[in-house]
Length: 173
Ligand code: AR6
Image 1 (cartoon, rainbow, N blue to C red):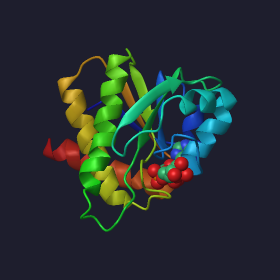
Image 2: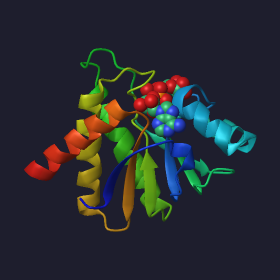
Image 3: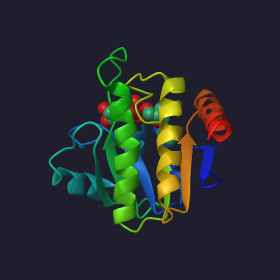
C-alpha cells in the first residue's frame, strides 16, 4: 500500500515513467486533463494518436510523452456516467486495470493517474475514488514491478475523496 501516493497538482508536470490520460474514444484530444496533456506534450502526441484508431471505453493504449516530463502517456477511456446501471463501475475499474497492465508490459515503474471520468463524464467522485483505490491496490498486491502509483488530484475535493477511499481500503485490507 505504501506504493500509492495521493497528491494534489497538475499531472502534466509529474516526472513519472508514464502519466495516464482520461481520453475519449477518438483519442484525438478534448478538454480537461486530455486538453492539458496534449498542450503540454505538443503536436507530435496528436500525430501518434491519429495512428491508433481510437480506443474502446475501459481499454488503454500507449504513446510516447514527447515534451512532457513523463516518457509515456497511457490513454484510457472512462465511462460516461449514466446513472450507475450501465456497467459504469466495471468499465471504470477496467480503465485502471488495463492501464496498469500496459504499464507493466512496457517496463514502467512509476505511473500517475488523474481522476478518470469524474470531470466531463460526471462519474460521482466518491464512488470513482473507491473503485480506483480498490483496483490499484489489488493490482499492486499481485505485481511487484510497479514501484509507485501517483493519484494526481486537481482540486481539494477530489483529493479528499481519494484520501478517504484510500483510508477505507487500508483499514479493511
Ligand atoms: N491534472 C490533473 N487532473 C486534471 C487536470 C490536470 N492538468 N485537468 C483536469 N483535471 P476530465 P473525464 C481533472 O473532464 O471526466 C475530455 O474532454 C479534473 O478536474 O478531464 O474522464 C476528454 O477528451 C477531473 O477531476 O475527464 C473526454 O471527452 C479529472 O481530471 C472527457 O473530457 C477528470 O476530468 C473525459 O472526461
